[in-house]
Length: 417
Image (cartoon, rainbow, N blue to C red; front, side, top):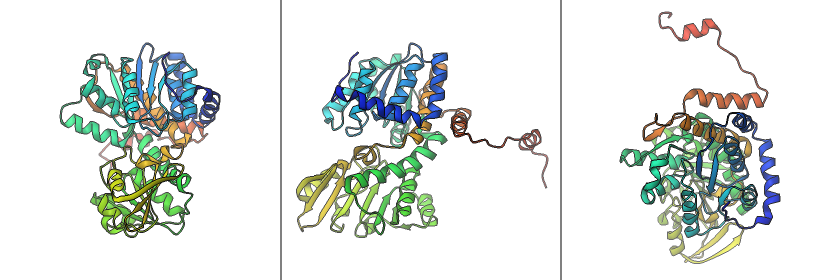
C-alpha cells in the first residue's frame, strides 16, 4: 500500500502511543466493536485530511473495522505525529504526511489522497473539499458524503453553500453538541495553553493574556488562562459574545487598545490578520504571539517578517523577531495551530467524543446515500445524544429518565397555571 512518512522505524513508538490513547477513548471503542460486527462501511473508500495524531489513528482503525478502505493525509503542515504516521504505514494504511512538511508537499499529499478516488471524505478545515471542487471535479460523481471537523471548515462550507458551489452533502460534525461544547471548549482551552507553555515555558500567573475571539474555543482559552492566574482581555466583533465575556469577568476592548497591554496574545477567530502590523508596532518588549485557529492567517506573519530586522529560532517552535527599535516579539509554531504545532493537540478523552461524531456521521451519510442534498447538514439530535450516552456509560454514570407523566406533560399544551 502506498505511503510517505518521515521515518518508518518510529512505528513501534507510534503503536504504543495509539494504544495509550485508545485507553482513554472508550466510547469510540464501543463504536469500533459494533462496526466490526455490522460492517456499515464495507466497500467504501474514505479520503481523510485530519491531524495525524494518536487519536486520529484510533478513528482510522474504527473505520477500517467497519469495512472502509482509508487514505489519509494531514490537514496542517505542523500537526502530524511522525511516530503515529509510521505506525499507520506499518498497518498498511495509505498515509501521507510528516511534521514540518512544505506547502508543496502538503498539497501533493492531499492529491495523493484524492488519487484514491474516495466515495466519502473526512475533512478538518475544508481543504480536501475545496481542492475537489476547484481542481478535481471529476471526483464528485463518486462522492456520497463528506464530514467536516472544524469551525473554520464550516465557515468555508457555508460560504460555498451560499455561492451554490457545494456539490455534495457534508455533515457538520463540528456543530454536534458533543463536539463544539467539549472539543472546542475543554480541548482547545487546555491544549492551546499546553502548546504555548511547551514552546516558551512562560509563567501564566500574573501575565495579561489577550484572547481574540470568544466563541467556544475562545471561552475555553480564556477560562484556562484565568485559572492559571492570568488577567484576561477579550477582543470580539460580536456584540453578544463581547457582552458574555464581560459578564464572565473579563476585560473587553478592541485589539488596538489591548496591543500595548498584553504579554501573551492568542487568536481563535477563524479570520484573517486579526493581529496585524499596526498592532505589533504597539506591543511591549517580549510579547508572545500564538494562534489556535485552524489556518496560519490570523496573525500577519508576513507583515511581522517585514517589520523585523532579524529573526531566529531560539527554542522548539519559538521564533524571536527583533524590531528596529530593539523590541522583541516571540511567535509560537510559526503562527500555525499552536496546540498541535508545539504540543500534541487535544487530550484523547475529548477526541473520543469528536471522533465518535466523525464515525457516526460517516455511517449516517452512507446509510442515507442519495437522500441528502448537496449542502451542509447536521447530524440528527438522537445520534448526538447517543454519543453522550456512550461516554456516560463508559464513565459508569447514570442519569434520570422522564416518567410517563413527565413525557405527557412536555408533549401537551393544555395544562398551565
